[in-house]
Image (cartoon, rainbow, N blue to C red):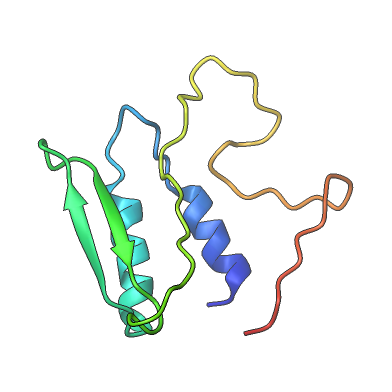
Length: 101
């Protein structure tokens, strides 16, 4: 699976803030696990949401921390011109550069 397909899959999870994010977190965990990257989950009290922490590379030296969030604001009642949980590729908006790995 290339990076565009991974991005397409990540966008497809409807992680609206009022709902669970566990399906998305599980997908990310599977990707990390497939590459031998250790991670841990920290679940909320209701066990409906989780944070994921992964360490990539050496643990004895200083590094870079990347932080993000998995929730989005509700899309109810908004007039979207494209489906909000589907990747839309357009050449007139901006260019996404995918670097080879």
